[in-house]
Length: 542
Image (tube, rainbow, N blue to C red; front, side, top):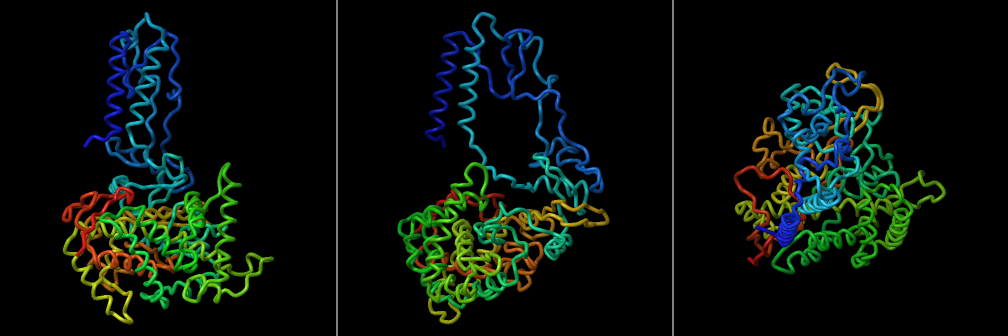
């Protein structure tokens, strides 16, 4: 289906071609066509980097066996970490191609037309979102790497020049999660968010990777306040009441999209963490949105503005914490932490910092909620079973909040579409992997999304099968890590599951998902990625 923007672009291109026909000027394709020459001494285009050889070969001389970059040994295979192709002077058209350029008109005219054509072509293509410093390993590249080198850890080099030790065997995954901080430390926390493994950054203003390096008192407080390991939180009654009230925003109309899901979940998060007075605090919501956009990192010319937002959000949250009730997470944290010594920030745990972290961590709940409902809409039998459980849960009494079937659906959604697809840690000292020694500072990559969808080791890897989580040992399966493993496991995993499953139950209790966008194949392999911004659900009353 053509869009309005696409039709407008096609019209502009047609007008450019018509203008070229009337003036007699050539229209050069912007995708590798020869450039009109002004003469034999025409200079190469600025984008061409002649004389620079592509990077390749062994990543580092002292880092074990020489392993070429992904894609170097198989030029026909498409990978996400191969070296970018660079055109040299030998690749440029010469001789007869130069005669195609007109000699009469000035050079500026065809250059303007070519530039306009380039702008039109670029405007018609979506621009991919890039995360600074992030690494995304594609499944095709990892399968090619395993086919060439087996399951042994392999050194690869990314397009940015970073060298990574990639783990491809489940036994190495077990060691990755079990290694202490003195051996494997976390990468700077700029890629991890939300329901998955999260811990505060240097200023406790953003979630980071699991690393188990929190001070013991901070870890104990998080485990106590978030009720780590308990399927139903001690304050489940007030929390579920908040979810039920805010879920009405999800079903206010006949459609459900990400904007509506974020509005409802963020209101509920502020009430659960800080109390009911924070529900309508749109100013605090805006500050938290800015902090999320900064990925918890203060960088570049925006440092002063980001610091200002950080300080204002911290002060506002601290005011809420002072008056937080006992049934809120902030109130429980304040009772656990005791008075804070402002003269020694590292001497105690500030409940306001923890509360702000929990608010930021719930940012992934709307995405997971929407994906889970989309998958249930594509699987009518699973949707009916989940709706029956939601209806029976009203009279569950003390067992209210368990929802084992819906929790399994949420876990399966996180298996298929993890919040953190790749985990990176850095060795603090010299380490040995499969008989090969690697120096301190080696970045170790665990491609969690690849292992959770590995068809060679995971049955029905690309299919929505919530029943796999009914197995008591599924939560300890080293291949599945929606909340990590070992000492770096997220202490709020059960609370996050309870809240997300409760939102799903509130939607399914009175409505049925009758239409979805995108349309998913219930029996075929599911797409590798699923952007929640493009999800749209149609709801009808039961």
